[in-house]
Structure formats: C-alpha cells, structure tokens
Length: 119
Image 1 (spheres, rainbow, N blue to C red):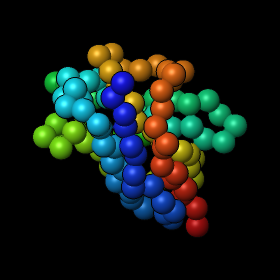
Image 2: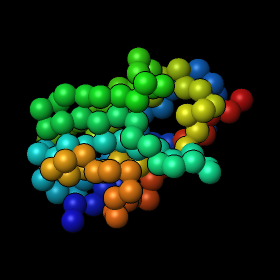
Image 3: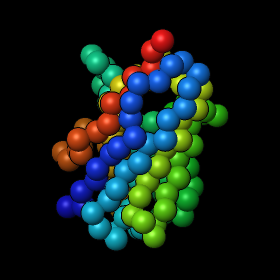
Image 4: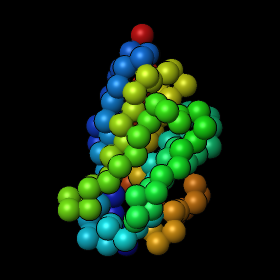
C-alpha cells in the first residue's frame, strides 16, 4: 500500500490562495491516477480534482477555474493550487491514488490537511 501525506493547509481569508502538497511513499506514484478530495463537516467526501499518469485533469464544477492540480513524478508529489478561495471550500483535504482513481469510500486515507476559509 502506497502511503500519502498531505500538507499545506491553513487559515486563509476569502479570495486568498493556498498550495497543498501530497507526498507519496513509493515511485509507483508515477503510474497512479491521483486525486484530491475534501470532506466538510457533516458532508460526504467528494472528489475535487484528479490527474492521470498522462497529466489529463478533471475538476469539480465548483472549483473549475480556481483550482489547479499538478504532479511532479521525480519528487513523488501531487499539488493542488487553490486560488480565489471561498468559505465553502473549508474542509479537510485528502489525496489518494491508484491504478484507477480511488472512490470516495476507499478504505485507505492519509491524515489530510485542514483548509479554513474565513474572515
């Protein structure tokens, strides 16, 4: 099981930016379909953005144009650049990956990183 550790969260004002990072424990990362997910209090986990091993990307409609997912295979690291943040983006953000992008009810999750958007 490849393990993932998220970082980069914090408290930011509406309209601000954050860059999340996700480190993978194995070079298998380079062939994985990776995703960023989030779970807000009282809500189900949702897939925010995903990126294939060939760098094709998809985004949740509510973040399209504001968030950018990218990967550095040499560093086994996944990124999520978040701009124009809104209070509704507040959640714990997780990364996960596999040969196919994991479902939101996958068994394995890392610790996540908290993002809070508030004035």
